Length: 316
Image (tube, rainbow, N blue to C red; front, side):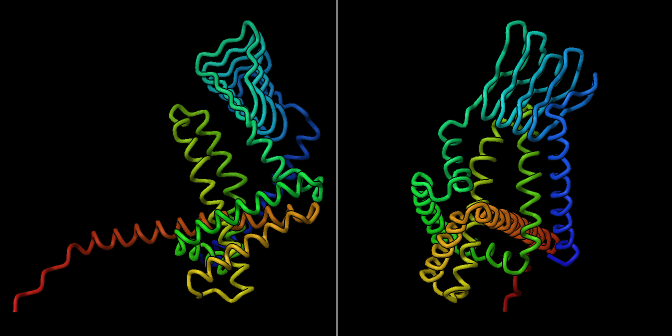
């Protein structure tokens, strides 16, 4: 990745941070978002979306808040980590979807499409135990047990990734070492913009549901774990000098690095921030390494098709 692309990625990260800061300030000033009548799609992060009785909107989407509908939604009403509340005067011509909450249909409300809700349940409680509790209670007994269990899990994932796909882990590791800031920038764009926006678009689309499940449960987790394992490989290789070592030594370096990175979570407050940066950087490196591999393969295929099949050698 050349210098202009690296600068673009870093600049995009800074702009994104500034935008999120402004969005947070606006959210604190206004707890709910009320659109003007006959507006387009409403999207909010961190607070509720309200469609008033006289409002007609295309779609209503909230991430980390509720969608409260008393008017008309031509498309879908979608809440991620929130509820969809349909008041008696609500009319939703598309779907009513809640991921991490429920759909509350009051008598008189109408939904012409599908009604779907999925609570996070044990997944949400596990995420709270593994991510939230270390911030507030880093040395509580339950937190330490969760830390040990998650450390063992990540070590096993690192073993599987390094043993079965060592070249891929090495490629992502090299991407991190050669382009750390670009990896951080693209990881931030992927984690904070591209993945959430594309997931919401899939939720409100007609054919999105069959694609959304493998996208969120297979593609994104695989990229995240490959990136995290590669970040561990960077740290472990620097500590034990296993950059070009045999597979067994490289595997041990990657697993040891993952365990050391996981120790960051035991540092109150600052640890979870550093740990998040590790995940985001690894995610960006895995994404850009995959993109580079696909682009090079496409170019090689195009060059082969243009050159045509090799001519047979003349008989001697």
